[in-house]
Structures are given as structure tokens and as C-alpha cells.
Length: 446
Image (cartoon, rainbow, N blue to C red):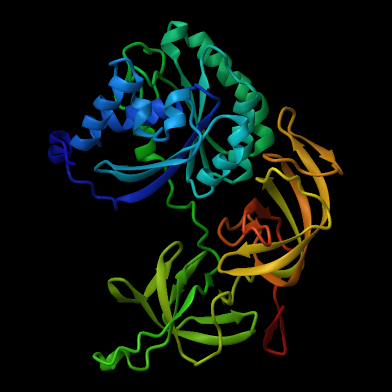
């Protein structure tokens, strides 16, 4: 849906990219309302969405449009006025496309927040101006730091209920700045706003003459994300072997490529790569995309690579550049968010899904649990309960090729799956490997 403003806007000379962001905060801080206001004021809603919003107003809003209903689609969410599941919404401006994850604020659904924020470039932590920084504010900020989300926005909401007090805004900012240095988040922006009334969301507010920064949408459009992806070491987990074998197309008769998503770095035709765990060196002959062959591709594009040699690799293998080699080990150390009602205990066996492969692992040690009130580590807990964050050690049945999560979010992350039920019980972030892949007599070994 295009608005008159969008059609009359001057042409943008920079490429239109995609910003993924999530909203988080405590219950009733206004996360869903903020997203609804963002969509509504940016004129990113279709007519049928507006009609549905007006119909729902008669049911749940007492005749008044409730912008939170744009994302709170479950009946239980609307009846209780809380967000339970992650809701995704999409919109675009002339400058950028956006994918929004509206994540729950209640401590009971911390695991849902981790799921929604796992691929975000930016996280918006909402704070009620009346209550200030509470445990959930600290919890979600710590989660954003743990997930290595590069950009953080602290949106001080409901400023209209504190009389648009600059002193209150600065007080909340000071509360955050007391613990932010411990979380190593470099890019933090504080914005005072009222999601209900739209102040400083899309348009600047006349109520905050003391605030000279951008609106929320202005910041989302301008924040620099080009360097968020790791482009230093080529990583390509093979998802499937592409054999079209189309008898009507002779060019595809002997086609054999390897398809997947580039998880790091840049690949070019003629580049030498290693296939792990096989340890075979070969050369990239062709790079295919949906639009046809290209000379180079980069993270996070999905491509098909045709290699110079007919080597035996399949799903679960990884193609690696010769520079900046990854680690490979059966001894893994990781931070995890436990997601299952049954507590994590040492000795339990699970399936670990990492990129495109699955391997059996055993939990050998629970090193510590993170106290989200103080950000201190509580050593040697008996277990990890649902929504707990902690550090564990794992022993894998075979070596895993990986990077530390701080260096590569795609090859440094995993999930744990419970055998039998196939339930996802944890999301994890790997620590840097102790040893990298070695070259011996010209052969790469792990």
C-alpha cells in the first residue's frame, strides 16, 4: 500500500535493505501498542486490516480502536491484555524494509523473547516512565546483550503520564547507564515517547522541546546495519545437493550444485574452499542465485555453489574459506536459555542442531546460572529451570565445526532437542573454540 507521501518522496540513492528488530519489556509497557502506532502512523496498513481493527474495537476495546490488536492476535492475548506468542509484522518506507517481532514481556515467556530476538539487528526495550527500570527491563537488556544484538533502543514510554518530565527521562537513562557498561552494548539510543498518542514514534512531539534526537521511525530508518553481518570468514553449511536432472533442459543434465545460505564471509568464482569434515580442498566454479549466475555472493544470501571437483559431501557438511579457519571440537561450552518445564540436569542426552547438521550430545557440566537481578554468576547450580540463563558444557558424539557466537551468530548458535518428543528444550550460544582446524601436510583435519 503506497501513500501520497511515499509516492511524492524524493528517490533514495542508497540500496533499500532490511532491518529486523524486536520489541521487549515488561507486561503492559506498551509493546504491541507501539508497533500498532508505528504501522498506523506510517500508513502501512491495508484497508482490510483497518476494517478488522475497527471490528475488534467493538468486541475488546469498548468501541475505541486498540492498536495492540494489530499484533495480539490470540483470543487469550486480547482478553488478558498481554502478549503471549511472538507476532511478526512487515512494513516498508522509501528508505528501508522492516521485519518486526513483537515478543512477550512476562517472565513466563522469556523463551519466546529469545526466539523472536535471535535474528534481530536491533532491539527496542520499552520502559514505563512511571515505574522506571524493573527486573524485566534488566532481564531483556541482558538477553539482548547475550544474543549479541548490535543496536539497542531504550524507549521510555507513557511520558504523557509523567507530564513529559525531562528530569524523569534523565533519571531512567541514568538507571540504565549504571549497568549497561557490564553488558558491552556499544550502540544505545534513548527516546522519550507515547505509543498511545504517537508522540516521537513517527512524527516529532511538541511536548518534548528538550529532546533533540530522532523519532523512533527516523532512527530505525537511519541506523547503520551494513556491518552487522560477519564478512571476514567464508562459511557455507550445505543444506541440500541440487540435482535438477531436467530432461527438457540439456544444460542441467549433469548439473550438481550445493545449495544453502551463506553463514559468513564472501565467496567468489575461482576461490579455493575446504569441505569439512571431509577435509577436501576444491575450487568454486559457479555461483547461482534465483536471478542467475553471479561472480560473488555474501552473507546472508542463499545460493547454489558448483565446485570444480566432484567431491562427496552432503547436508551437514560445511564449505570454508582458506583464511580465518573455524574451530572444531567435541568439547563444547555455551550459554543457554532453558525452555522446557523439566529442569536441565547433568548427564542428560539431547540432539544438538547446528546450522544444517544434527549431532547427539551429553550435558557434562552446568557451570553457572546467571542472576538477572545482579548480572552475577551463581556457580554450580543443581539444574536450570524454565527461562533460566546459564553456562553449560557439552560432549558431542562427533566434532562440530563452529565459530564463537560473538564472531558469527549463525555458526555460533544451536538448539537442543529432546529425543523421543522432538521438543526444543534450549537455545544456545557457543563460546569460541579452543583450537581451530589444522593443516597438516597440505590436508585440513579436525
